[in-house]
Length: 519
Image (cartoon, rainbow, N blue to C red; front, side, top):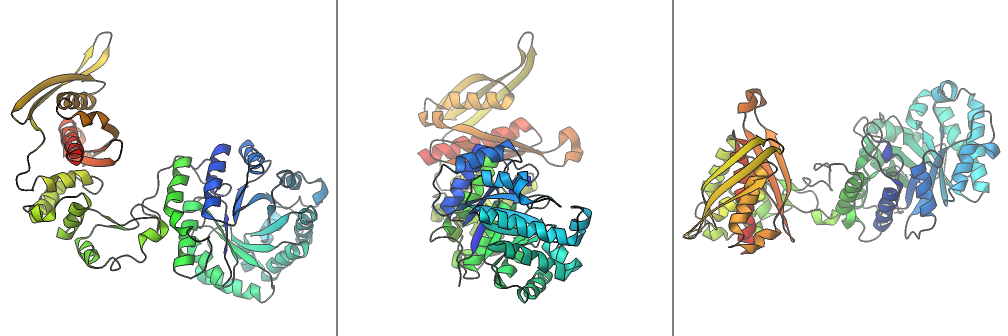
């Protein structure tokens, strides 16, 4: 079977997504990763439309690209005009990319009501625009905008627009579901009809407004498409574009169609999260294949089966796309969840006195507002504390937190803690910019003499969620704390109607877990 060309438009179509922005430098960084992945084409933007795209093309032409060809995107020349004096086409040439992607009108509605020209003139500007770029030595991909809507309105005219692009010299004509509303059976039927009229390489460009972008792209490949256009993580205008992470994984793992060089598929998870990091957006943990939760197992029955056979509740091995399997502990868990979590954290399961007791504790605590799905270190500590002979590294005697306003200083917080380490009682205090910060500093100050490794612990994140908000200030507060040292990051949880108590619970678990791992 032929190699399917992956045409990435994250840097152009993807940046039309609300809340997703890339600087010129960001675009270069993402393009480098896409090239390393092994995509065939990287669409850098629309030359002349904004300074960021201009910066990208200027920098991109001085760089070496291993697998990808850089493409510049633009429209056909103006209605009733010619390509020779068209500023848009000149900007495409000035970008000096080996490939130019032109979009033109397919739908008669757009020709007459948007371009305000005739159907014949639209065919002329398509053919002449493509031919003009071809004569200048560029490879041309033609995007037939609103192709499926256009075909439904006037099938013969939609096909004539493709023929005009082919006469002009387009190497590939791409069927675009620009409004994203085509259903899979429509895509399949229309492509079969079009193939009977043209014999030319074609591609597919789908949007996700009907939640069908990925399946529509895959159906097009089954019908003979040689190119798939889309974006990493499916970002794009409105509801987004076809998610290339899902497309590429399905092509190679489900359909036996190669679209990346050997080993490329294993880089998908890392690339997906890199793009989100560069764009400063929160990753969608539930994306297929590349989401953090794509191979996370929570139900007790599922995890029990997974311990016997990894295939029982996973459709592919997560490592094939660079992801990994995870077990989540919650009120829905069974013994298998805790056994898996114990093994993951190096807890000797045979020495845990009562796994069922820990499981019951998890269920009871979650009913009181705790949530252990993202607080695995707290679960590990519950298991460790069940081990026979386990001695806590420290014990709380009491603590006191004062928050007050002082003239000339504003809000002021001070915490005092009394701890027991072995037979020694430690009593110390610390000031902070808030009550939790003061508690954290006092706890560290008290312990550092016995456990100097605590100096490497850093509070990486602190999240607060109010439960049962209808209770107002009496509501239960859940606190989730992320802590890191030089080698790892771990998460702990606390919950109480008193935010200081909830924070203390999470802090104690965080410190005790970090010290127990170090020891």
